[in-house]
Amino acid sequence: MVAAGMAATVLFMKPPIRRSGPPWPYTAQNELLAHTLDSLGGILADTLEVRTSVIGEGFLGGALREAGVDGDNYVRCCTALHDSLQWRVQHEGDTIEAVFVRGRLSELRAFPRSVRGFYCVKLGGDGLVSECTFVPETQWTRLRAVTCDVRSTVWQSLWDYALPPDLSPSGEIVTERDSSRASAYISELQHELTDRLFAYDIDFYHDVRIGDRVYILLEEVRYPGTSETGFRRILAAKYEFSSGGVAEAFPFYHTVADAVVLDFYHRDGASLKTMFLRMPVPFGRISSSFSSSRMHPVLGYSRAHNGIDYAAPAGTEIYAVGDGVITMRQYSGGYGNIVKIRHANGYETGYGHMSSFAQGQSVGSYVRQGEIIGYVGSTGLSTGPHVHFEMKRNGSFVNPATEIVPPVSPLEGDELQAFLGFLPILESAWERMAGVDLPVPPPALVRTSADGQD
Ligand SMILES: [Zn+2]
Image (cartoon, rainbow, N blue to C red; front, side):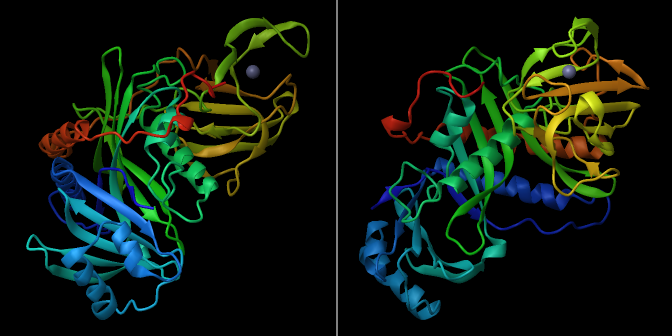
């Protein structure tokens, strides 16, 4: 049951909580980010490989050998786990990860299912054990680089290429694979990629082609109480179109209203965010445009359509298109269940016909761009599942498709200078990622038609 993991994995610890101090308080986070990306680039260049195995019936030795740990390494790792780390009893289902750099064992991680954390044995360049530690689960994060060829839909490509080894349907790695966790992982990753990072730069409904390629640097966490991995966030991404052209998302910590946030920028320091997302649902199809007069499908006579209808399956998540405060959240006549949000600069958006509202929000709640506010339905005057999306500026309806929305401020001054200094590190990480070999999914997972987007 030896299976090689994705070719690029590196452990690193959570960034320290916000530090403050002149002249600009968030240098520390950006330095850490730069260091992380830099070391990732170095490791990728060295061809890193992670081999995973599962312990069967309490037998550690077999699992170590399956993961490629043998000879002197085998003796050293057994001794370190047993004597230094006091891991004496193994159970079926405990997992082992062996990290090889250029074929040399550099780190061994043991994940007992019953323990909230993992044992880590590091080996130096001389092959001797240099460090033995227990890493608590709360501090476990991992940076991973994935490269995805688009062969049908973006979702399918992420599924084929981006799942971590312990959730991967293609690897004979885990004893009890949880497909719902695998789906959740990919859903969260895709949401971040298509609905947040590139929501305005790429039209994922029309512009995606077979042969496009996506590079993602992502951060993972260990699920509490299990040996499985969860998606945490994207740290950088790049989308290469097969027709030429590229969209990039470079990370940078900056300050917003006295808080530190990780945001994404173009290479010139312009924000990837615009004030509003292109549309409030993923892969929505416009079923009715904004117009001053149209035949109403239910009422049967002509009247203005003050918004855009996006058809989407019932239950699809509806996102707030921009940051703002919920001003209405109720059943309201022909709109059915509707949420209205007040934004900056005199804007207001409305989302009608919802099947239900998101949990934990109410009138007065502050929501962020891309946050789920409800689910597609067909309540009120409606002929089928869709979201009626409308926008007002200073009290008058405007067409969301043509409205020229104010941009979010670019990086400036010290922040811009720091970002530009950071750019070469990001660039070199991309270059090295481009050389990473792609794992090939089994034929059963390869689809050729562009399905699954309606
Ligand atoms: Zn409508």
